[in-house]
Length: 240
Image (cartoon, rainbow, N blue to C red; front, side, top):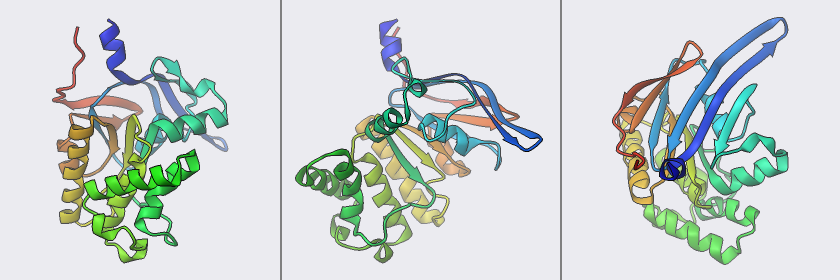
């Protein structure tokens, strides 16, 4: 039983999100129970507007649920205050979004170093980690290029490197290839799978891209306020 608990990265219980818009109540989802095991890569799919990004933001502690719990290591992360949440998020979660959110006034290396410097890493350690990641992602020749000098695919790889700098336990991505052409997107998809397999990185990815979803261990569909298993070919199983 201990092995099972230790293999669980995230566990949600009764997760519900409701928005109040004047007299209108909008229920995005209700009573979601989701177990994410260490090393899994999971796709969340569904129509636009059903709440996929909101669910991802709650998993990443960027938003709070209306009801329910998000357990990391068995602890309800939302019991802490805003500062505790921010510290936990910075240490444990890496984010990549459809639009990379990189800082155009800095070069690729500086963008990747930024989370490390903010978290208190020395400049030398942050630089070393950033250079290693950018080299792993095929960008060793682009370190000093400003963001506007990089292609869309290169910019997104810089965003991936930035998300991984603090060695997070969970990697969350929201439509990471949604702004890329099909060829560049395919390269990014293969990169994400490689990172999952070589680093043992736990991944949850919101996507409309069927090709990317097909490369995940599990595909979950958010529909009619519920999250349903659409496909499971996970090889990541706890020992019993």
